[in-house]
Amino acid sequence: MAAKPVIVTRPAREAAQWVDEFRAAGLAAAALPLIVIEPAADAEPLRAAWGRLSDYAALMFVSAAAVENFFLHAEKKKVIATGPRFWATGPGTSRALRRAGVPDEAIDAPPPDAERFDSEALWERVRGQVSPGVRVLIVRGGDAAGNPTGRDWLANEIEAAQGLRDTVVAYRRLPPSFGDKERALALDGAAGRAVWLFSSSEAIANLRLAMPATGWQAASAVATHARIGEAARAAGFGSVRVCTPLREALIASIESFT
Image (tube, rainbow, N blue to C red; front, side):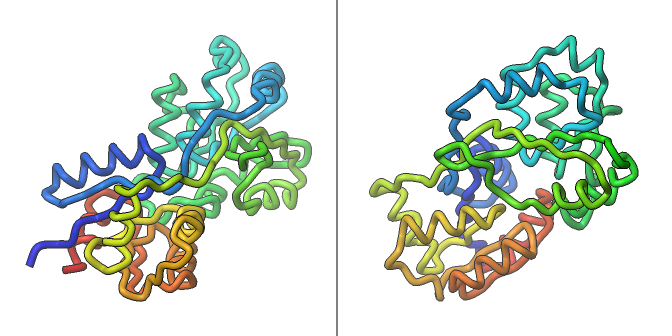
């Protein structure tokens, strides 16, 4: 029996790339972005961060979108002159840094074959760089009003090590607006006719907001982190599997739903 189609829920550009890869592997796939990426409403804090770049021993990026929107305001000569470390939580963020011109030797990230890609795995690699007085800039997303969103785990670890932590919002993460096509695809997923792929707990929350009257007991999902899997189960998804966010592993996990 053929594997069920997969619904990719990442932001639009990343979702399109994943869909292409899944289709190339012989899977039916469709994009249903559950997080909309928009530029930060106020770019002045980003320009100010570039002006203070020499203050930072490291810059931590939570996502590829953080990299791309931060580097829109780049002073590239200053990057070379000051030489901070660039921290990435996973392969997609590392690739975005390379596209932005950051050399491999300046990037710290979990190894490509890591069992997980998150702040905890990154901290294992970089904790030795933080000592009292060392300053780190965390580049992250924000809500519609521009307030920082996401976990503070790594920020708390930096402060526990007596490092100094600043935060700048590089982009906004907004909920999607569903039309008839998107709603029909979501209903297929709710009925178990397709497998959801989640790489963010926020995406699950946005799905529930967009489809408040929908039950998810018949739905199946692959989550790229245990924390995301817990969010899917809490939302009522009937079958949830956790898988590392690497192409071959994801394909095998998706194909296991028939």
